[in-house]
Amino acid sequence: MHFSLLYTVVLLAVPAVVVACEGSCITDTTAKMHNNYNKPVACALSNIGQEIIDTYNLNSVPGSPTISIPTLLQPMTTCYNNISFDALETALFPHFFHGKCLDADGNEPDGCPDPDCPIVCGTPGSIVHFYSMWYHISYNTTVASFSSCADPHSTPYKNLQKRILAHVPESKAETGPGPQVLRSRRSGVSDHDEASTYLILEEHVGSSLKHILARFPQRLEECCGGAKIPSCIWEKQMKKLVLSFP
Image 1 (cartoon, rainbow, N blue to C red):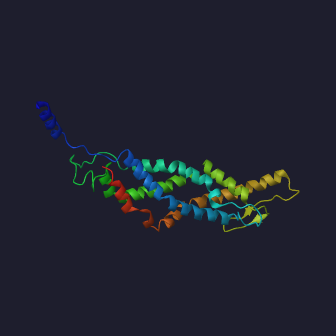
Image 2: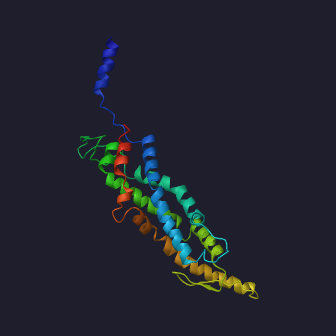
């Protein structure tokens, strides 16, 4: 009896421990936000893919093999899928949301750990209070992940360039909305001349492709509903999920 009373007193003397957003809270909320971006990213990539096809007249020759946008952009999408989740999780936790919910005086404000904590920390209530930061970080990280894949020095970029070169029409000159694209495979043309022409083609494709891919932020913004990205906020469903964790 004496032990039980002492144990109770000790428990009452210990401050309540604030449970942070960790473990499944981190992975599940990140996964939900990441999945929310599937459609907007697909929309942006579809627009970019169509611009590439139109610029280089890739499917313009009747009877020639055509290439679909998903197949064309496979190097980009594979790269994005491989890095985007981890990048988003790190950008949210712990780069922004982390630490204890204490004010300048070392006190825990009302609303912490939930439902609405005015201190930047690693709790559900903090995510709710600073939700505007949550969705802006998510948007910017999505853009950064794709931009990393679209770096002209990256393997995905070079593989995409090869796919374009393999499907450029085999005529002396093809022009599209972009720069003139030259290619020659006429009989009687030496291997040296053909190799030189291919290098010219490669240079033209490379110089314009990087500008097309650099428009991803603009394309994503359009697919998110405009400058204020109203279609890429998902506030109600995300706050509900966040507050389902202790």
